[in-house]
Length: 350
Ligand code: NAD
Ligand code: DAU
Image (cartoon, rainbow, N blue to C red):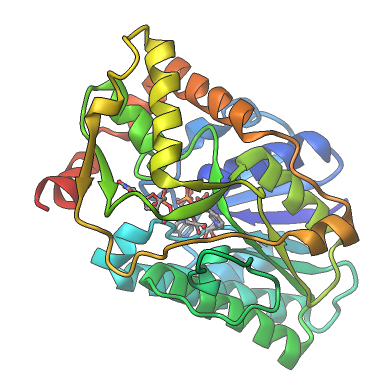
């Protein structure tokens, strides 16, 4: 029996990881630690919240003393660390929040694990979930590999890069048994509608304009969130201590092409004449420091740990759109309150 701490388990990716682990490993106790920021939502987990091996702890990873006490009380033997501020645009307007949660919060967890495990690392693992954005931006060709130099450009990616360095430093200096993965853009159910795909689904639903940054030519590599959760499971169980694994969908899309595919599916699903949603596309001022292209080489993970994405994008995007349309209450709930103020500042005042 393991006691696995999953941080950020009420968020988008975290909730899929918690669900997978709670259902797949009834012999393990799963502790979901989350501050419940605007991005954390316990409604994401109603299907598993009553399972005997699931536990929720509301806490802020920036509170180092509290982290230390929780480790002492619960004696976690593994950590899967997803809690973070995750939206690039928010990092541009409020970088300090990203330094606090993503850097200080991660170091607090590293300290708590190190102190509690007392150099007895048998059966212990600290798994840090990171992003491909730490590698910076690619030109027209090439892929990010695990040895690509770090070159972050936004406060978000710089804070994630800092946390990755701290995690590796705790391995090299204190032998803490760590593993890191860096993943490309996720999409799927339960993503907060500030990110491109759910934002545009929600805007089309309300006949609101679709704010495309710059010329819409930036490229992202999209992976279905459940495939990311499957990769995390594989790396947690089979990854080598001290190693890094890149995770990606091998599925590059220019933003504008992706948006047009979504518009077409939305017209079909909402029974609107073809072309209705595309007319909502509005080109707006580019994001500051906007990375041009991300593309992941996930060959190491495929070769060494036998993981491959299970879902083709054409199917995944349909499932995703269907989910948001059948869960409009979820969308309405998370886009009320503070979200309205954020939206106004981010888009209307441009
Ligand atoms: P998210 O914003 O949906 O969820 C983040 C969660 O962390 C929320 O539940 C939030 O309440 C919690 N949280 C934030 N600050 C906290 C704090 N101080 N203490 C405790 N909990 C706190 O994020 P996501 O998209 O699910 O991303 C999860 C992780 O995966 C992040 O580390 C992110 O950098 C990484 N990642 C995301 C993507 C992506 O495409 N979304 C891709 C690669 C890596
Ligand atoms: O690559 C992994 C990263 O993917 C994760 O680490 C981040 O947590 C996650 O938010 C995501 O970052 P991006 O910046 O790539 O995702 P976002 O959905 O914000 O934007 C995707 C692309 O769409 C990007 O080129 C910017 C563009 N965009 C985004 C928004 C919100 C627009 O054109 N208009 C928009 O309104």
